[in-house]
Image 1: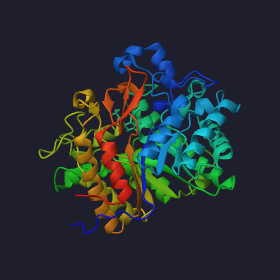
Image 2: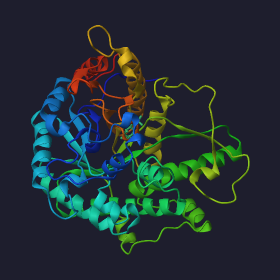
Image 3: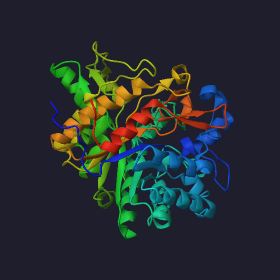
Image 4: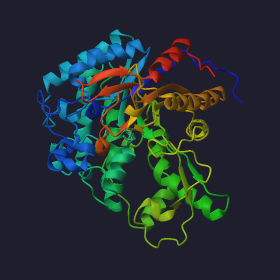
Length: 461
Ligand code: BGP
């Protein structure tokens, strides 16, 4: 087992969030609507307690206070995103108020020794782009590259770490194979095309980053779930390979290795699901990232389907999910907790992906009705979160000891944030936000615990 408790020097200790989940001010200072704003206006009952993206922790006005809280906790890095619809409200015209806000926000972090890690897209499609077809329109590749260029030019002197996307698989799956994201389409062929345009937009943004002569680093953030088979039986192993191919390799291989998995191409061809390629496909695919962000929450457990589906309607036509009898659950959110998954991901990156530098860009424990854990002093006694983080960090340390190139750990999230259709249902933060009391921020027990870990750069167990 592990022999060291010490994290590497300059290890990133931080937290992650996004613009649409924290900023609020959704129609202030020239910002145009996103799909979330429009959806909430049309159908508020789709959102938990009808709370929409206009009611977040109001970071747009309170970022200075929040950056001080980061500093109080010893954080040395922080990830958030830029809202495309705020920076370019019509896709072309730069919004000077947005530039001023983001510059001051990022500079405030830098002044306090906190590395800003800035992501370009976290599920928040501008409505003007949605009206043009959103991810289905190949023109989005150029629109996105232009947005990226503007962001790099306006903030590149302050921001040295960029991500093109957060969890692109989520906007693909939830928007085009389900109904949790706009436009709530259910069509595998369209989902594949959307995924393809997303990949091309990623490559185009990386290309622009190199062209503007930046001196920082660029990567992307993927949600990687290790896929475990029910058994060693060949049919379960095959189910595992299919699930891994669609959920992991479909994006990770092109992004990290600049190749497309041939088994995937073959099956897409066989089922007439190949996307229409854009002209620049071959040369764009050569663009390389500098680092990878990995969001890890829970694994995927699969088994063979009883009957093999004759048509490929969605990835899960090729496997069934499997309920592992030994599985440990987060009783407050309903997701599996499997700490060793973080180690398995680390080893996979080391062995199959050239040990590219990477960090945990999200990991965390959502808790519904977390107010039940507030004690007399007003502090959330989140010992379950401390245990969750400690156990994951422990496996992460073991992987680092075995040569993994992991350079940081960001918790989801810093201050409880708004989360899409779930709004404020599940709380994830080191800080609690009180929606009834002027959005007051109160540290939870875990924030004090982590502050000490960061100070020593070492895990006490
Ligand atoms: C991740 C997303 C975050 C956040 C988190 C929590 O996948 O990157 O944006 O929403 O999940 O999700 P939930 O609030 O549904 O528990």
